[in-house]
Length: 341
Image (cartoon, rainbow, N blue to C red):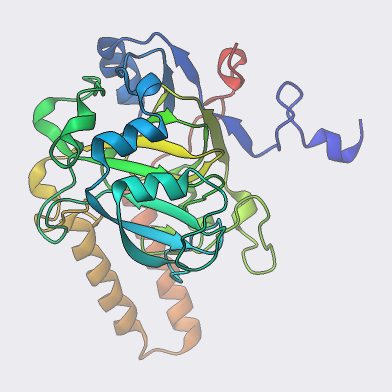
């Protein structure tokens, strides 16, 4: 076997560090809650009844039923949107105009260029104070959507409308709350990385600096290829469960429409209470970061070799107290999970 071929999975023709997210059919809410949810691993649920939206939500239908609502949109001249360096503009459009533009590859009306890309992440009525809730912001459309009871109703945090142009790719990031993404129109490629691979992802806050995860600049990001990649392709009607802290990168294969639902996995008191987006780290984490910053500052009075030594000692203490054991070697790699049957 050639050396290059030896790096491929013999069943899936995937790179050695790539695994498929399991796709499970006809899972009940009870089975999800009792057996899948406690594992804290991503999984695609296929066959849930999420309502008539899968058939109804054509571009014409969306425009007719929510066409005049003003929405804040990301607009970029490139398909890879970069939140760290802000390679996009924020613009406001009527919802119907957004749908019309995002569903086309070339537009006569545009902000930057005729082939610009659009991305909507819906917001609350007052983005500074209120969370997004599709039932409130898009009531005429929500009659077509069933949100499955995969989590306790009292733990609900927000629901988010997402619309993206063909080939639009979002930056790799993590969320501090559990969520499901319900794919309604178009196919969407989702690539995920375990929280335990965070040290390979070149993080800046909750986002990775590696923009192109399919063609990584290994000179700038040599450790990135050590991260194990989990991926799947969502079809209309699919639901993917993304546990809190799992990094994810999303690419719309076609014009895409989806709805996210976030809920609180931890006790409410552990989350930042003034966070309508739900993306701030837990209060205890913010405090811990501040303590680490002070510890590093305290070591700066020492020579470099002392800083190195005691820095490693601090990391060792944290590792012993906080680190989990590595993911099981056979996670996602048994015969039934590697590819959908």
